[in-house]
Length: 287
Length: 163
Image 1 (cartoon, rainbow over the protein chains, first blue to last red):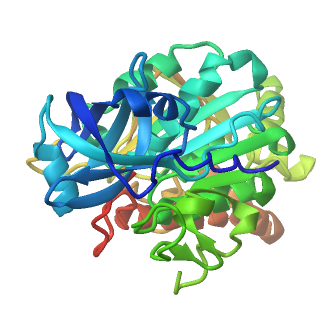
Image 2 (cartoon, one colour):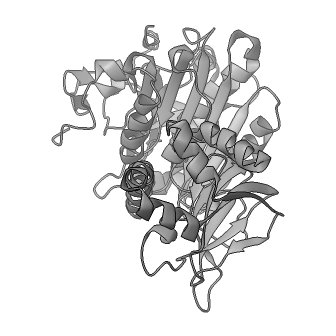
């Protein structure tokens, strides 16, 4: 099973940012928000052809540029959603923008989730925290062609009930009879009636036929390390396990080397990797 | 006797006891009884004598810590197939958390004194029980430690939270 090949770079200069207008800002969590961006007419086709798992470089004029994964679509015309956690200068500046403001966009870049190659298999999505954002388009793509897949399982972990991202989407997916969704939080107080514990506990409990299962993981690497271990314990092979990695990216096209990971550039060869192609990624301390 | 046989058969479906021998299934089952708790009902309370040990057949249970002046802190949740409670293995045999049913929950309840007596009489049986429960305890300890790691927090020095 091959990882989705990166899309050809945009026909226009990949170094040149194009102006996209913010059509909507949605506050997701205390520090997390989603920008819905309208592309200019000449970028709409490339934007609409993005693959789930890819990212764009978002540029706040006069401040800086950050890679942000695409977290969904919004209607026609290549309008894309980007879900961002405000943790630094640029993401903080993005958080201060409002509908009507303009950001610079380059992309989409990188390799996405192997949605088509997973057809015929059971699919397990394991997400943690804001890691659900790059997986949401993959979930929607699978649900859009649900008959092409076997069992479909979405497991999500968050720090607390207040930190659950896309709660409405999780509820909508959960309401389907053909999809199993389970959510857990690290800690909770009295009113919470859901699971408490790590997402690895959900992996241990869920019914899996390992040899027919493809797993997509995204979340903090600490979480993915333990989740990969839990999947391996259930018999899911590294060659059927895909994960999205985070490294500081700059150029987005595999030239500057800032996001180098072992022999790979995360921006160009990833961010989605097949686990057996980056063995020991969570064991080598220098990585 | 029929109930004991039924419990013995149920234990074959419980992962932690599935590979016990048939004789040992019967030994364990001999201390067991079926039990049902309604949603929201307390199964046991912190500080009480650990005179029971449970295996969840259906439903979900949450473990809570009582914190004065604050709502109960939920520390773990368990589901079908999970063993519930290990304070019965360790003196002074006092329960350390509250356990509440989150929904209609069916359990097998084992008389802890009965199990301890059988384990004292048969060291091989005791060893078989410990071999199966200690990994559960170690696993939950590891999970608890990982929960303390705040896995979903932003690592220091990483400002590009592009996910």
